[in-house]
Image 1 (cartoon, rainbow, N blue to C red):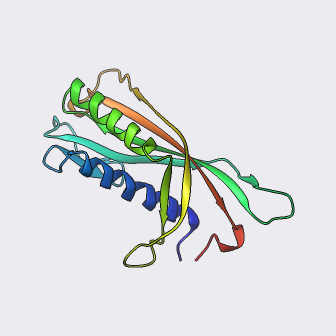
Image 2: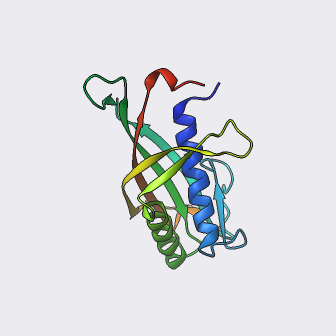
Length: 162
């Protein structure tokens, strides 16, 4: 069983990865990971710049309109950029932010289907980034940025589980 939340998360990850690749951030320079790399780097310096999906959270949602079952929910999604250098970290964080905002909407894909057709769209409310200050950073923590994306999803709660 897949939840609407899983559709949102995977659709955003697919969208971002495709746009980074389209803008020339190839896997030999920038690696995209779909989850936070808790043990991947340990004490070692980075060999590339990494973008990782981070934490996702939402508001409690609210009724979209009177007389309708539709609900609107605001998702905040975080991505972490671990830069090979200060320049790479800042540049890739900007590329992530502007890629996520580039079309104003992000296609919501039917991730249960092999060809993943678009079934809806998430409205992009905005994206921001910031450099993280880490006291006594390990070698892989020297150039870390967080990118936050806010998207709005309007949906029927009765169909949120499939």
